Image 1 (cartoon, rainbow, N blue to C red):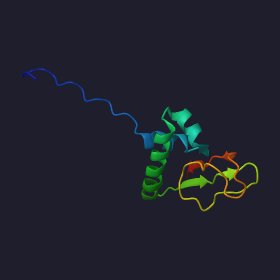
Image 2 (cartoon, one colour):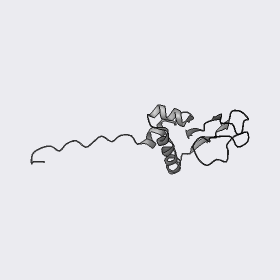
Image 3 (cartoon, helix red, strand yellow):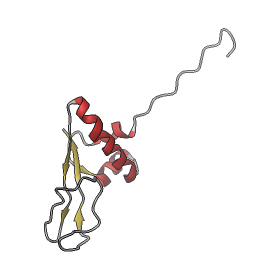
Image 4 (cartoon, rainbow, N blue to C red):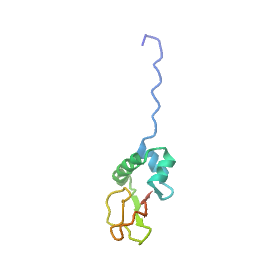
Length: 106
């Protein structure tokens, strides 16, 4: 820069992936696919952002509420599952017809 010239404006700061996901799940429980459609992020990025939100929400006095995945054929619920991703098949009946977990920030 030459003396007397104004400096260029700083680049605009965009919304981070966890911030976009937090806004999307603040009102209603959504699946990762629905969050992906609402935010424009790929599903993999949504899962990464959800993991980040689960850790950072505690500091703000919030909690990531997870409605567990469930088998649509036999009704088995994946209550003890720690991973946020959708399971591939049911351990009880081996069906692949699984309702995805739903996420809500509360």
